[in-house]
Length: 466
Figure 1 (spheres, rainbow, N blue to C red):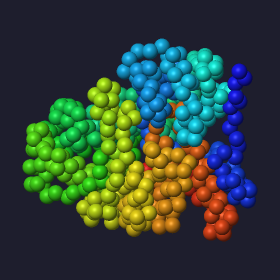
Figure 2: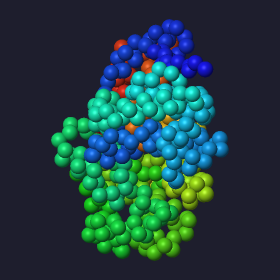
Figure 3: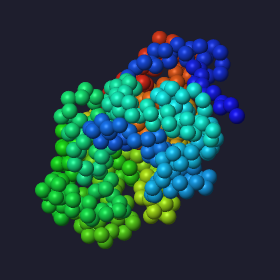
Figure 4: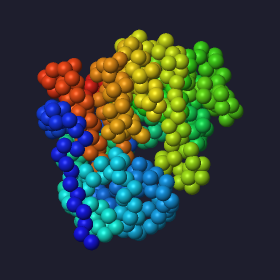
């Protein structure tokens, strides 16, 4: 059986209308070679600190990618079969992906993976059962070469900046190694305080003890706890961080007085908090963190609306981030009012909101971002980081919030090699959307060119203070 060819059509994702497509091509030509600015993601800083060769195709492209293994799992493939939670021959794991690659037709994962296979590894036949070994051997052979080490790929992908995300309990040693190495690539961290501000986070009490030990602060008191958080924020800023990241289940905020906050902290510190008190504590801490951002200048990101670890059995067996997080309905207007009432008019605060609830785009998020000076909208994210998700986002937010209350694109990925693929998809979709405005005579083409550059790099640099 002859293997099907793998081609990347130069007009992929552009509008089908010939006139609009012609404009999109011209706009894309203006941004295709601009550097990648990736202000939020989850790649491993160890890769860039040690610059060791990647191991094999399965450990690099399959096992870290929850978009891929959640689809496989949904079709009855045990995670152990691809090497998650159990040792497995990497070639056998790769064959599992090849056997099931048809499942990804029409998904963004297929777009990203095909780009990696063709553009990074030069493969020109489609991944299928009969080409599995060809893929595995070719990818592994190339990964052993110096030009496929992490730093070389970083440079090849034209990445200007890449932000990782670390817990307050992380030593940041790998970031220190990067800075001390003399390498010119810019890899910075971001402060993700969830393990020490969410009473429902596993090991919360022990995490607080570790926070106290790292900072030398007495986290037995609310004042000591806040001092410890400020100390870790300062350490992250010294390591290059320009942002914080908050993955709360809801967007709830609260503004408690000092006495109420001290009593609530005593409850959560002692493990006696009810579900309602845990939610109130998270809500209060978002407002506290906004105040700290005004003090230290770190941009604040809020990622609410995910029911984390929905599959209890999978969480018990494999831990966090194994593809069982599900979007939920999210209120923003009422939930954010305490925080915005306190800080929303302060231009020193830069607050970026993300959502998994698309129904809130036009009804809540665009009007909020179109009013409060402190507030901007993050791009279509996670489950909506897709061609149609990006189009829906543009159509539902632009008329109310404009373009400059948005922050460009971020890839939010653990899959390093997919970063240029994801940014390319975003640039193509944005150029297609702008081309529609041009042919409908809502924009002149010179304005669309300017906006294409804004959406590619200028807005993200401004929003994240890079």
